[in-house]
Image (cartoon, rainbow over all chains, first blue to last red; front, side):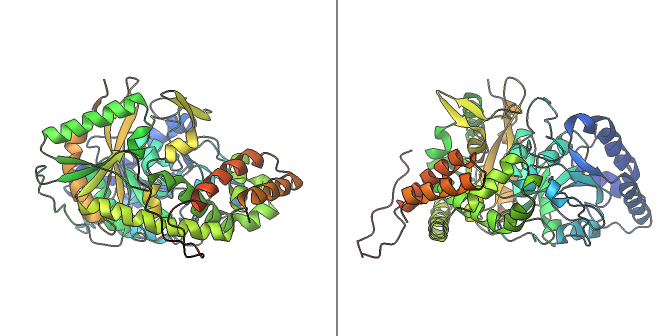
Length: 452
Length: 58
C-alpha cells in the first residue's frame, strides 16, 4: 500500500519539507510490486536498482537544498511502449524481442529532469491495439479490485499499478481511449491532452495522427503537474477559483447516452445532479455526425497502424498475438479513397465538437458504457442487446482522438460490486490547461458515490 | 470499386494468404466503409448539391 499521503501534490510537500524521503516511498512502492505483480501482471520490467539509486540521488539533492519541483523523488511507472535508455521497449510483443532503447524518449527525459523516480515499465495490450490488455506477449494485466476482470487498456498495466499503489502515477498512451479507459475502470484520473502537445518521439506509434501521451494518476492536481512536466513547461498552480456557479457544461446526449449499462447510466445521472446542486449549469448537447465516429476512427486508425506494421506482418507474422495480427491485417485492405473520406469526416467532427464547446466551458459524458469487463468476455449485454466488448469500450473516447480535443476522466461512482465508474470532461482544442482548471473544480462534486 | 467487389476481393485474398479468420472482420469493416461512403460530407463530382447534415436523433 502507498504510504499516506496518496497524491503527488501532497507527497511533494512532505518530500520538500523532509517529512518523507524518496528512498522510503520508493521502497514502499517496490515492496508493493514484489508480492502483487505475479497476480496483477502490471509490470513487464521492474527497475528496482535504478529506482533506488534515483531515489537516493533525489534525497541527496533535496537535503542539499536543490529541490527541483513536485515530481522530485516521486515513483512513477512508464507504459512499455515508451523508450527508457538501456531498457527494452517490448510493446508487449514478441515482435520486439531483443530490442533495447538507445536513448530516452523526450517524455522520459523530461521526467528525469524533474527528478522523478522510474520504478518500471508496465504491461499493455500488444502494440496498444486493444482495450482489455488481454492480448499481450506477457499475459493479461488484471484488475486490482477483481483479478478476474480486465483493468482496461491499452495502458492496463499502468492503471493497475497506480490503483494498487505500485507507483504514484504512470505515463501511458491514448490512441482511442487507452489512457482514459483503464484510468476510469480502475478509479483513477486519466488525461489525454490536446493532440500534439506532448512529444511522441521515442514512443512506438500505433496511429500517428491519433496517438497522444498522457498520465494516469490519482487527482486532477497530479494530472496538471504531470501535464506541465511532460509538455516541457514549468509546473504552474491551478488558475481556477473553485467556484462551480460560473461553470457551464454541455452534457453530450443521443449517441453518447443511448447505449449505457444501467449502473453506469445511473451513476452518471447522479453525478450530473450533484453538479447541478453545486451550482454548475448543465445543458444538453449533441454531435450531429456522432453515428459516424466509429467508421471514421477505424479507417484512420487501422490504415495508419497497418502502414507501420506492414514489414513485420510480412516477415514475422507469427510473433504477433492472433487478435492483434488480424486487426492489423484488416487495415491493409482499406483503400486510399476511404482513408481520405475518413480524414474529411475528421474535419466535420472537429467542427461539430468545436461548435458544441462554443456554448459552454466543457463537455461532460461517461467515459465508458460499461464497468470493467470480465477477462475473456468478447461480448457484453447492455439492456436487451449484445455488444462487442472492444467496440463498446471505445465508443465514448475515440471521438476526441479523432478531433484532438483534450479530455480527462474522473471517478464519478461505482457499481454495487464496487467497480469504479468514470465521467469524461472535454475541453477546447489546445485548451488543456483550462480543461484541467474546470476538472479540478468539478472533482469534489463528481464522486465517487454509489450508483444505487 | 464498389464495396461488394472490394469485399469479395479482400476475402478471397485473405483466404489465399491463410487468414480465413479475417472474413467476419472484413465484413464488419465493409459496413463501416459503407457508412463512410454514404456520409453527407463526401463531395460529388457530378455537382449534385450538398445534402443537409445528418442530425443525431438524440
